[in-house]
Length: 179
Image (cartoon, rainbow, N blue to C red):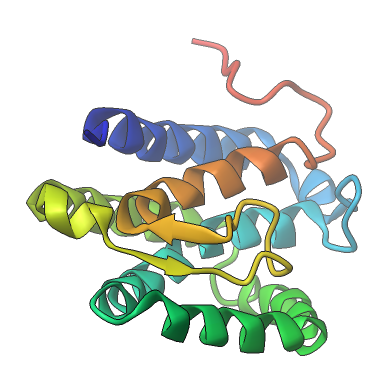
């Protein structure tokens, strides 16, 4: 059985953490390079939000392929893996460009909206629907498994968020906002 509470608690925690970072980081800190990426901290923060945006588009795809023979999603995943280089380019430059639209003043509101929509959607899913799965392009993301269920996809953006949160180069600890 899927732990829906754990998944939605991860969503709310990510919102609080993002809001805390945005409230505490100044312009210079947000413009600073992150650790281990070519993005600035602000661009990386957008990329972290983008993980939740991607899930909203992935869910119908996983459900669709979940109705088909597994071999079809395996072929699709192989095609996506073959396009890893263009995907990486689009992922990098897309996040850089989109961070100008969903910048520090808009991204927290966007994440709140996304996580509320995902939590509502998750609550309505049947156990049968959550168990549907498809093959994934494992070269695209370290959290993509060879096969992922709908439930895995709901959990994915918080794994992605937490991974990238460790790459922020900030002069303060995340998640320790002064009360």
